[in-house]
Structures are given as structure tokens and as C-alpha cells.
Amino acid sequence: MNDPLLLTFNPGSSTVKIGLFRVTSGAAVRIGQGTIDFRQQPLRLHLNNNGETRDIPLISRVTDDLHDVLDETLGWFATHFPLDDLVSVGHRVVHGGDHFTGPVAIDDDTLAAITALVPLAPLHQPQSLRLIRAIRHLRPHLIQSASFDTAFHRTQTDLVRRFAIPRQLFDQGIKRYGFHGLSYQFIIGQLMQQFPRLAHSNVVAAHLGSGASLAAFDDGKSCDTSMGFSTLDGIPMSTRCGALDAGVVLHLLEQQRMSAAEIEDLLYTKSGLLGVSGLSADSRELLASRRPEAREALDLFAFRIAGEAARLATTLGGLDTLVFTAGIGEHQPEVRSAVCERLAWLGVELDRQLNAGNARVISSARSRVTVLVLPTDEEQIIANEAVAIHHREESTS
Image (cartoon, rainbow, N blue to C red; front, side):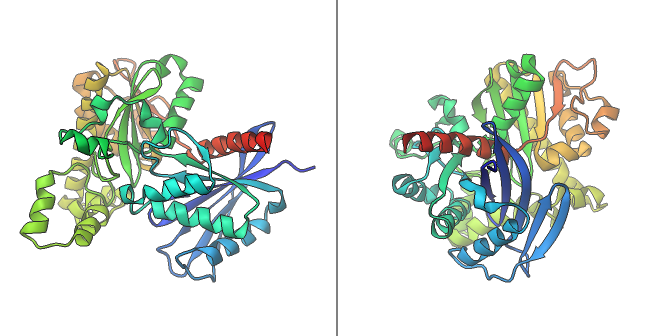
């Protein structure tokens, strides 16, 4: 009898990463993965099977329900893997609000609760819902689970989560939630395994990808983070603005006569590195450019990251460990160096050679703060939680 398989879906606003895992001795082991970028025309499935990659054209059209695209995608997976052994599907869901404090099995009630949170994450939440409903339609017998990006940050106090606005608005749910929780959960697990002493120190982690944030951990628990009510907050990102004076939004509404939809598009898709540089949202392209606008965008990026790291060190009462993760954090020494130079006053000092080589430990022997580069894996957390949910559902059925 073959080991059971499970799928994970990790959607962004315009892409979805798909992971395939074998469940062996109760543990989820990745055996394949794929990516679909819905901005590409024609649509393609980028499939990775044991290190062998293929770009597979998809003939299905993108529709609101994604039934055809997902059916075709599962068909391609079935040509490489025994999908008859598929028993469970795990989903990353960006927003869990105050309702969800951990992973859950998806039933009619939880689906309704996830749907009710769409106004809090209008670009990301609908993507998850489309995938959940498509699997319900195509493979209704499968157990589905939801893993929430906000759940990891529920250990934060109300003092940290509160905005200085009327109290009744906080009670209505207008508060700081924090995101990238699945990534931070994985990083804490890696610290526990590889650097157990550091895992219990004052840690700031910087998840630097196209979406970017920082979080502070005290004894492995989240106590503060840069993202707040929405995924716009905090540091500048590839196309998102980061922290912004609310007066700017009022000015755009009242003086520039922009609509809410136009402002949303501006702040989510036309700002950040792209907006400041006027060239690209990709930090790699900006690093290769000699244009002063490209340098200014990267300088602003590093300046805000360092400032946020210092703020989080204040929350912690000190800084012992700084972790860089995600695409930019793991692979771009120039960005890490620019951030750490601004944190020298906190005792941060890099070893240039180790940093250039993307080593695990990149701080110098003299540094008072240990600086690490740790790869993150959100899909592994989703898979681990899906396994737990599947076992629980089977034992109660």
C-alpha cells in the first residue's frame, strides 16, 4: 500500500505555489512542487519533479471559479505522481482575524468565517477561497485544512495590536494583525533545531520577498511585527508602499479626486521599489542598474528595514539575533549588508566573506548580535498542519 499524499496551496495575489507531499510515518515529505503565475499569457505550470523542471502550457482559461485550470493542473500532476493516493489538501489563508488561532479543518462553518474576512484582505483572501471551492467541486471527498498567516501573531498583547483610534473601532476588529506568520513559524522551528540557545534569545526576523515584513520573538513567540491591519503596512515592498501617513490617503481622496479603487491599486501595485525607482519591482534588476533612482529605492528599502529592526529591538528590550529569510533575505548580500551597516550601533557586524557566500551565520566573531540567513518554507508548515488536521478528522469520523 502506497503512502498517502497531500497537496498544499500557497496563493499570492496573482500566483499560486503548489506543493505535493508524501506522508511517511506521520511526517510530510515534499516530493514535488509547481507554480502558476496568472499574469502570464499563455498560462503555464512550472513543475519541479525531483529537481527536474518543466514549463507546461495550460490550455484552460482563467475563470472566477478556477475549475478548469485546477482540473488541468491536477491532471498534469497525475502524470508524474500517484494522485489516487491523495487524501488531503492544505491551504495558506492570509487572514484569520480574531476568529482563528490555529489551523482548522474546512467545513461549511469555517468556510463562511473565512469568507467573512475578505474585507480585511481583499487581494489575497479571495484567491484562497477560489482554490478551496475548486477542490470542493473537483475532489469533494478530500479533507481540506486552512493554515492562517495571522494566527502565529495572536500571542501579541493588545497594547501592541492597538491603534490610537477610538476603542470601539478596536472592538470592531480594526487592529494590528500581522502577517507572514507561517514563514516565521518555520523560522522559529529552524532556530529550535539548529540554534536552540538563540531560539530563546531576543530575535528579530526579516522576511524579505516581494511581500516583506519583520517580526520580533521573545522565547520563540511573536510579540511585535511590522505589518499591521493590512499587508500594506511596515516596510516598503516590491510594489507596496509600506507605512504611510493616513493624511496622504485623505489628500489623494479629497485633493487628487482619486477613487478608493485607484488608491488601492496605487498602494498595492504601483508603489514600493517599483514606485520609487520607476524602473522595476525586482531588487535584482535594481542592483544591476546604474540609475540613481534604482539606488535610491534600494537605499530607502534598507533604511526602513533597519529602522523597523531597531523599533522591534525596543519592544524586546534588546537584540541578540537577527535573521534574514525569503527570496531577498536569503539571496541578496548587498541588501543584508546595507541593513546591517545601519544597525552597527546595536552591535551588528557582518563577516563580508560569509555574507557574500550566503552562509548560515554571516556575523563576524566581534558582532554582539548573531546574524543568520535561514531559508523559509511556508509550504512545509501548511503540510505539517494538514497532516495533523487529517489525523484528527479521521480519528473522529
